[in-house]
Image 1 (cartoon, one colour):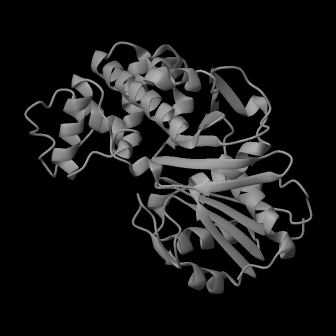
Image 2 (cartoon, one colour):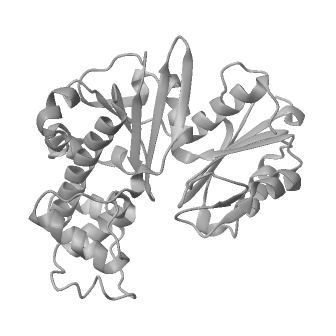
Image 3 (cartoon, one colour):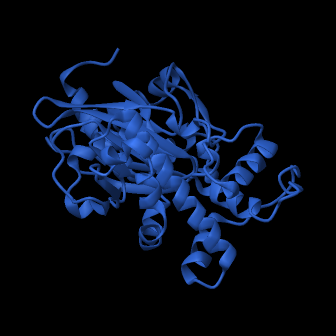
Length: 332
């Protein structure tokens, strides 16, 4: 592959920055020169991109960058990372002929038609090749991403990025009401993302025993690492960690079912960096029960298969597929 005709793709989350190159002459994009960096090691997206391009000795002519934030104008501000940039200035700085910036879960949605059975694990229903939408995509990581895929395999697909992770949390029992009040005390509002993300698991763990809200109201309070909570829960000896992860899974099931109803989904895909780490725990939890617990609409969600995406880089794959789709027109 000539580095003079390389395309750059990136998937920028709150924790990790993923980069790869694709060959513009391949009809189905193949990710090469894949690198993953910690965002905390860089002052900005520009800094991280410069480091990658220098590291792989590339000179990309086009780029697609997926970001964990709304994409509504030239100025982009990441939701869970203190990075911001101007699309126009970034394009000029790197001398890209074209730069496309898209929401990170919108990028994941673009990857869905290219995923095979070995790229997923089925939680509910049976696996079948994707034929038509709507398809709901959600997933907890540094935040909670939500997207929608519409269309079909014959006419083509369209990805719709959303900020559905920031809708208000709807508690269903006493423990969830406690967690909701705890989050409201700490943040002023309890959104779904405040529970269903890495820090959300840490907050659930803290809230379970903080009935006087002393931790919630302490701005300097520290919280356990979510990876440590997951590992302790999987080890099976820490009851509080298991209780926190079980509640996380229960809420995830409720929210996934709600999103399926809102989208009228034919399928649901769960993405993000967290869930693939504890699929057996999720399967044995109340996730499926809560997904199906939709009253008169239970019969609808019963027919909706749920897959967990285990492909390691769906955001990069989706950004690559989107970028290739732009070869037929010139960006404005």
